[in-house]
Length: 212
Image 1: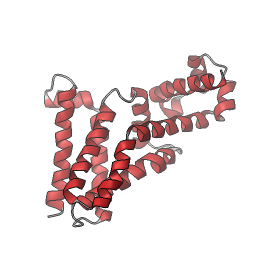
Image 2: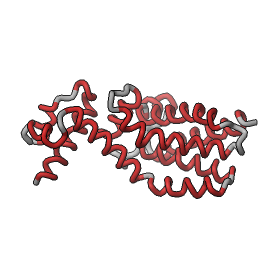
Image 3: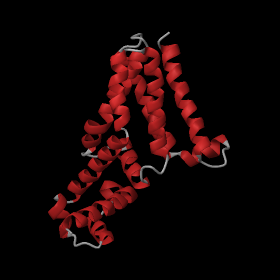
Image 4: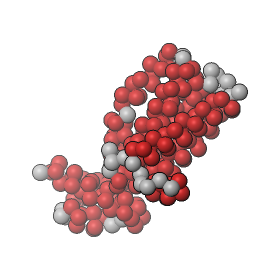
């Protein structure tokens, strides 16, 4: 029963933080939506900041679990020191993240909290940064460096990856607007594949022009 109550509170917190952000969220509303006494938030999480941190850790665990296979393959690609293989795998990773961000595989509430925290960080941003964003950035930058055959320095790769990440998040948060601008009927698998081709083109541009 105790575990169930804690899970209900966390689920309710996702809804509240996704709707109102950290500053606008109310622990009273979180408890009311879960139909649990507000004192339970203090008991299980230590307060509003604690339950928000728990929500961010849930995001980290969810994404890391869903990408665990790619994380394992990453080391194999790096050990092989194959530039063409690194380019192919880099595109595969970016396609996967685009799919996760734009599909229903991850809840809308989870995505909203992540995108909000990324664009307007709170004091708890380090939870996402240290355990999810920085490791992801490190791996993708290393792949880009390897794919360039060492012609792009790792320091420069870190910089080139930033707009790629930003582009992913823009696609995820502005799907409807992008479809309207591109005159696509709606966001579907075909639209996602088109965006994936744009991501591939960005990788090729960096490698073929910046490293040339």
